[in-house]
Image (cartoon, rainbow, N blue to C red):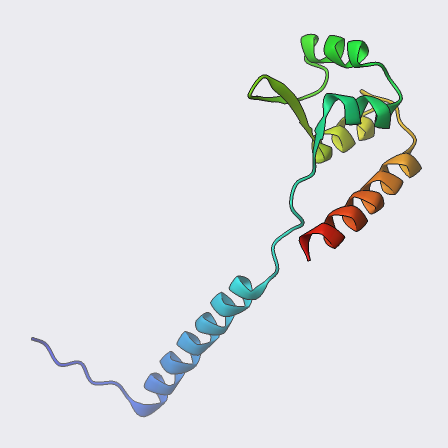
Length: 113
């Protein structure tokens, strides 16, 4: 085994750096995670966008809007829908999206308590 000696100042610098790294790691771990993803059914999304479910089906077929199939049910991420609206792939009043998001938060916050 090899013995390594350090000057007191070098040792203090090393300890200071380790403490800074430790603080950084703990701060990163303490950052709250982002809001949970909102998933919409075809019916909810059609109502939100004011389109028919058939139009939504056509958009899926044309790969205009991303979706997931879970147990033979189509689900859409709200964030993906927002991106499509921002890219003008789908048209929707932004105020409608904000109202939906606020309504969703209110509804799900009261049920999760």
